[in-house]
Length: 374
Image (cartoon, rainbow, N blue to C red; front, side, top):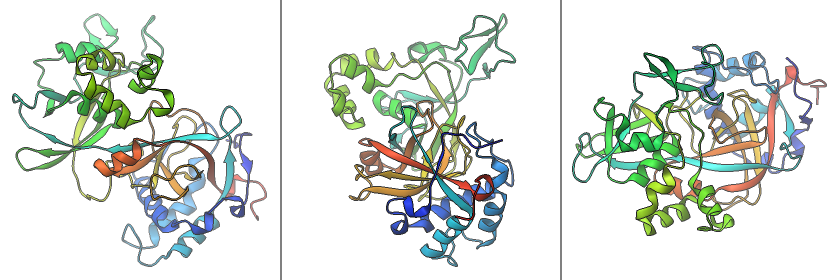
């Protein structure tokens, strides 16, 4: 496997703000992936960052300390670790210019273990008749986009979409994990793919992504912009929520245009400072985990993101080392990322306004880069 010709070799001196970053925070996230891969390796992405080339870096990360955030490393030692094992390459967007970052977070919402008059919107677990499909078992005529389908006595068919499910297509199957009070809150749990639940019985619970109905995702912001309801430059999670609150009679009209429906599984909250376990099978680290296009990139890859117009995280230009530990259906392309902001309302305020141009630099294992004596 060879590196993509898209990549442009750089030095660490070329990365704006590199010496000022907290590399120790990034190392803690990287180290979690280093332990996970002992159980199951990550798949190499199509752009040629071979998972096998991470072996030495992962091995050293695992031996530093028994703690996730090592007391035996300071920020400068963590910086030296990344500079020892990696070299940066610039990744241009498909258009040749800057890339794009958005934000995501883990909502924290009140929920009930049983349906009540107030709590009537369910979060559902994966149905037994939902099956994964690929080119090996895809029946003729089924949309090639669909990665899930419904198993029937007559074979595989498209699964009911959001509108059909919310109108009762899966009622009576006992799939309800918890019940929320608000349909818009439930929709944004679907969008984020996870949530912490403050249960009415006193428990703190968590749900995270298990599967989806399979249809294409259509964001409400795009729809409301196309309908002239919200100017494109003003589309944020906050403005979308405000529009729904002002137009309760049109919520279903807009939400059902997004045919994709998410199913969840229950998960523990082992460490309240960390996010849910995501696609890379490690807990997400606020401000240090990034979702990328997993078909192109390799999970565990460090990415240095330079987004000087983004100041929502800490009132300073965003220049941080992030670790690729998640993906998403809207995250496509070589220079496209989704920044994990954390859990709760404060994190949601950050994530909801992030839509910024950014330069993407992947840190590539030195063994993959010619002239690695730089």
